[in-house]
Structure formats: C-alpha cells, structure tokens
Length: 453
Image (cartoon, rainbow, N blue to C red; front, side):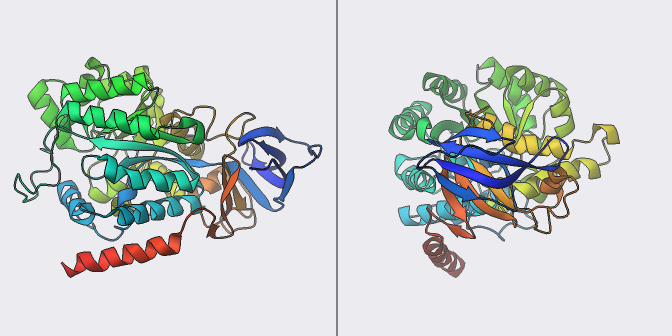
C-alpha cells in the first residue's frame, strides 16, 4: 500500500456541518487528520476528493453471509418457519457456493459504506471445511472481519424439529468438547487480527448450548484474546424456556458462567428485563440491535432507549438478507430510531437521536469487533477505513444537518469510494477485490436448483 494524501474532502463536524479536512494514510492507518492543508511528502500518492464527504467506515455487527442469496424468501413467516427455510436454502452447499454467497454479502456491504463486519456462520454447526471458503473470501475482500463460528451442543427446542427426523436433521448437536476443540483449531489456523481477520467462538444461542460449551467458549476467547458472539433473547420463548428450566434469565445464566464480559457481543436482546440490561451494562457486553429482522419476523422490539440510558454499548446489525433483504446499515440506523418512536412507548425526550444511531454504527460496531478507538473513527492512529459520499447527492444536498441526513436520508447511493486499511475496495460502482459477476452466476444456478425441488 502506498502512502496517500487526501485533499479536497469535507468531514462532518459536531453541528452536522461539512468542514474541510486533509487526511494522510500511512501503512494502513490514519497518520494525519487536519483542518488545514498538509505539507506534501515525497513519494506519496494524492487522492483528490473535492466534492466528497468523508466519514468513518460503518460496522455491521451481526449478519449471516450464508443468507446473502435468500432475499425474498421469508415474507410473513414466523421465527421457526424462517429458521427451517434457512436450512432448506443453505444445507449441503459446495465450497464454490459458500464462497459465492460470502462474496455477495461482502459486495453488498462495501457498496453501502460498511468496512467492518461480525459474520455469524454457518447456519449449521461450524466445520473447518465449511468455514474455509468463507474465511478466504473475507481475507480477499480487505474488510475488517470477525468470523463468528456458530456452535451448539443442544437441541433447537425454541423452533421445533421442522419435520426432520433424528438422522436427517441439519441442526445436529455435537459434543461440547468436540466443538471447542474445533473452534480452537479454527482460531489457530485463521485468527490474524493484525491483518483485520478475527475468529470468534460463537454459540448459536444460549438456550441451545450447555453450560460447559458456553463457559468453555468464553474461556477460549480469553485464552486467544478474541471475541465471543451469540444470539440472545431474540424471542419470548427463549426467555420463557430458560426461566422454566433454570429459574433464571439467559443473561443471569451467562453471568454465572463467567460468559458475560467486555469481549462478548449479543445479537437481538429483545426480551431483556431491567436487571438483564443492568448486568450487560456493568459487564461491558455489546448489545447488537437488529431492527429489520426483529420487525420482519414479528418477534418484538428491543428496548433501545433503556439500553442506552443504562450505559450499554449498543451496535447495529442487519442480520441476514432473508429477514432484512438489504445489508445497508444506513437503513438500519433509521429503522432503529423510527421503530422506537412509532411504538408510542417513549416520551419524546427519551427518543434516541440520529447521533446515537451513528455512534452505534461506528463506535458501537468497533466495540463488537474489539477495535474500540481503532475502527469506526477518523482519529489519528486509527485504521485507515474512510468512506466517501458525494456531497451533491440528493440525500446529502442541501446540507442542513449531515449527521441526520446520513441516518434518515442516505441509503448508500451516494457512496463513491470505500477504503479499508488504506486500500481502496470499492470505487465508482466497482469492487476492486471481489468477482461479483461470477458470484451472481453461481447464486442464480443455486436458485434454479432449489426452486426445481
């Protein structure tokens, strides 16, 4: 990577105004962010960003790349029906097919200004063979990624058996010791945080996992200084099951097992009570809000305002394309706010704001990646992950309050260039590291084969 000086851009100040900024990228980091022109350095490349707004790269803190080819498949489904449809759509894929859908997920996120992602994969218990193509695509993409390995040693009691028998059920439980050993091997093989690639042990959901697996996965994360990611309290039945069988909530269970800490991040958290929220805030755990999928499946509304007021670190996720149909965090930011307001449960002074949403999509996501202060920011010393928007695009012009406009008006259509670790990954509507046309061709073949059955 050459050192790069960026001239002519504007950044968004605390009042939502566009103010001039000059930036220097060196060795994949932000070496200078200045309100005045930078002195040229010999040998550096110059990027003319006149007419563009530069902002921190966004983070999608919970998605499933395996579902990138499943848009338009789950309308009016409840949570169990959606889960079993996912199995029909994803089980038994070849390495080429896995790589293709991961490529589509990466491409969709890049074009929307997303430079970091927590990818919870696959839809079944993780295997080294099944995860290898995913890792390879993310490595090639240049994005900052945590590959979160889905593991479970219990039954999916919250969704039934889907009509499968014990022999052919794709959601087969495996012993905790086997899953932990496999996760450790995956970490040893692929975990390379210095190049933006992390591997997390990632229990599917606390209620599908035994105590030994949950505690062991967190201990593994501590041993390798990595993250721990899981679904948590997405549906009412998950809460009720834990209360009925254990007499405590899933959050309290995680806390008792030592699996609630600042290295943990939890997707959904819809059915949390006040004590759960306080525990997560005290532990420093990251709550990942997924408003699209929660709304599309009708599982409920996460208590976002209460989470923020309690001091929880909140990030945003799109979840998979099957329950969102887009991987655009701009739209997620807007919906996260609008659903809270439309519920009628909050007095206007408690409404989370556009700036709250931007913080969730940047700093909150960075926390889920264990990259606080390094991702989701335009600060000297941080990773060089800037995103550029056309200042004259209809979403951002005229510039009244650009922070509000990025949340409520922008949908990624103004994105002109995306850089991660100083490397241009998307520019002028083209991806520099991904074969998107080839991936689309493979995905279309997959669609035809599935529909034929």
